[in-house]
Amino acid sequence: MSLTAIGIIGIIVLVILLFSNMPVGFVMGFLGFVGFSYVRGLAPGLSLLARDVFEVFSSYGLTVIPLFVFMGQIAFHSGISRRLYDSAYVFLGSRKGGLAMATVGACAGFSAISGSTNATAATMATVTLPEMKRYNYDMSLATGTVAAAGSLGILIPPSVIFIVYGILTEQSIGKLFAAGILPGILLSFLFLMTIYLRVLKNPALAPPGPKTSLKEKIRSFAGVLETLVIFALVMGGIFFGIFTPTEAAAAGAFLTLLLAIIRKQLSWEGFVKSLADTTRISCMVMVIVTGAVIFGHFMAVTRVPFQLADWVTTLPLPKSAIMGVIIMVYLFGGCFMDALAMIMLTIPIFFPVSQALGYDPIWFGVVIVLITEMGVITPPVGVNVYVVYGVAKDVPLEAIFRGVLPMLAALLICNLILLIFPQIALFLPGLMR
Image (cartoon, rainbow, N blue to C red; front, side, top):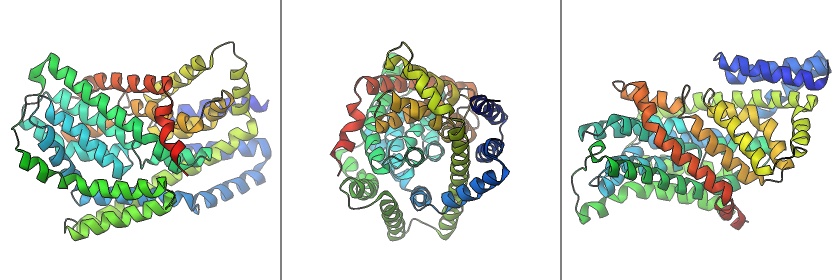
């Protein structure tokens, strides 16, 4: 059997096992080990397994993941998410659709200190849904807004997906973080416009809340000040070359904990829960990364990714059409797979293709993250939708999926804009040292 055939069989078996809901990291690691051992022998396979597991779990670069996760957990348990929403509520709540718009703003703010789409969706669903229900919002609009806006957690830095992509492709994590800022702002604006247009067409979907005075608006700014300080420290330190991403994560986690202690908003129980959740989430990510590294080495010995890249570059198609095909594969796969799993499975295959086509690797990372954002809210396995469903409880699942459909249009438009104007993603990274 040829190496190419072995590689293709490995990919097919992997997809089948992933669709059967088996643990992503263990499946990729097991298949990678078996495939590599079949090609090179059992002894080299065992050596690869031991080396990859040790190198991933002892990697200095990957320490950035638990630090950013810890920062987000402390922010949640100390009430920063609630204060973000309260501030956005004061500014936007009196408008038609204002509470939904405030939800987008709060999600964008929390994403800047969270790094996880599921955590952002779960946190903001807990905070915002009761308020929108109290003001008689259409719950399809309300839940769809939270599920979609929660996806900003993997685009606005710090993003776990960007960290993993940067490690897999050997790209600067700092530049990837910078590349996500302007597209994150653009997508947030498109979400706001989507809500505005829906409410303009049908005002009954989202009645206005009570008006607030200028004094209340000024006072509410304190709710976003701590988030801005944390974000400025982390991203400013990386952008100006003061910190490495790992040092920035440590500084951000320390400042978040310090602010929580100063404000006396973090209980001992919340602190312990933050540590437990950080450990659980970080271990899950590390296992998935390990599995992806082992599977990537199997793919490398079969040479399937490189043969695919060579074949694609010879197709009589413009490179934009080939990129469109890649995007459709991500969009389809995202309907069935978790965002991190999708990145792990496809990057070893499609990254060489994008390089052969001459695309900037930083821009490609932003586009892929945007596409996987669509996957977390599309049926049948839109993870964010199920997260919001678990919080809302009395809202039917189909109503939430119906609510995210207009937001999918906003994501598609954002992708199209980035394809036409790649400098939106590349401008800030180009200014970095």
